[in-house]
Image (cartoon, rainbow, N blue to C red; front, side, top):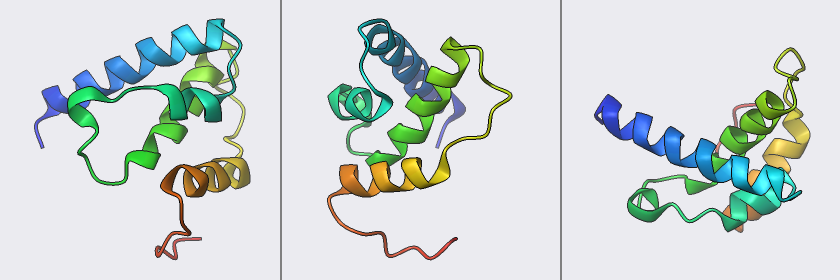
Length: 89
């Protein structure tokens, strides 16, 4: 995968997350609402949630705070629509 594609994906996510953050949406609602356009075919699209959650932390100047992993994993499972087959925790 080219770095420019990853950059473009992250730019889109940050821009769209900012709009939804300013509208008062939760990270979970924002992740569901963001249209990924050409990136929608990428595998594991539910990974948008950790990216949005991190953007929200940045927007709130809370980058020194740990990510809420249980919330993130539950949200990713909800976006995916089924439990993960990955056993990484």
